[in-house]
Length: 166
Image (cartoon, rainbow, N blue to C red; front, side, top):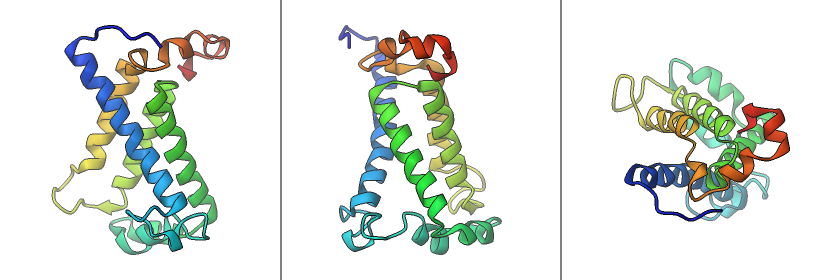
C-alpha cells in the first residue's frame, strides 16, 4: 500500500469508501454477535436470531410491504443479506473489487429502499438512494487505489484475466 500525498477530492473519496465499508461491516458484526446497538445479544444471528425478521416483518411499509414481510426470517434471505454486508463492507474497506462492490452495494441499497415505498420523509429520495449513488461513485472513481489495496488487486493475475473483478 503506497502512502502518498493525495489531492483534496481523493481524501473525500477515500473517506466515502471507508465510511460505506464500515457502515456495512458494522451492520454485519452487530447482527452476527448482537453487540447491543441495533441487535441485542439474545437476538444475534449466532444465537439463532434472524438478521432480517424484525425489519422485514415490522418496518417494511408501502407498495411492496407484503412481498418483503413474506421473506422475513427466511434463512436463505438471511444468509444472502449477511454475505452482502460482509463482502461489500470488507471490499470497500480494503479497496478491492471496487466494480463488484460498487454495483452490489448500490443494488443492496436499492433493495433496502424498496422496503419502504414511498419513503417516509420524501416522495422519492432517502438515505438509501444517496448511499447507492455513492457506491456507484466508488465504482467509477475506484478510491481503493489510494490508501487501499486497489492497485495491488488490479495487478493480480485473476483480475487481469477477469477485469470485471477490479
